[in-house]
Length: 147
Image 1 (spheres, rainbow, N blue to C red):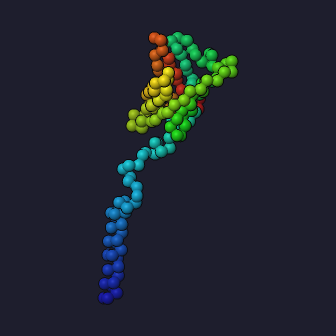
Image 2: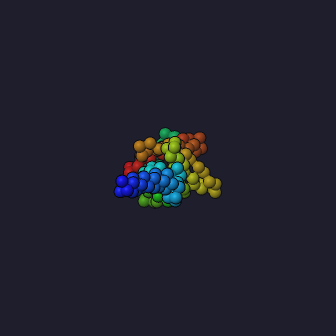
């Protein structure tokens, strides 16, 4: 009977200890699960090199003048746009970007003529379109991940 009491006591204490650990361990883990970002935000699947597959200003096809127009979204939250003309001249521009995970928007910020400009675009299946009005004409740039 004494052996049975010891075994019962040991099982009860072990069970109680496990329950206490399960209840209190999340408090002392040093990591609040509610504050963690999602896997999508962590892995940044939107980062990478995008190729411009369509560029128009009004009815004019701008890609006829360029060998390539590439946009690189870097892991550190910066972007770099590189346009190589058919004559060989390279033009570069850059700025910062962020990603709105809830709405699947890319938000670009860049200095343009001394002022910070922001452009928000919807990204879907690795493709997004930037639209902007220049001198009364619509500039449309369509980018696809990997080109």
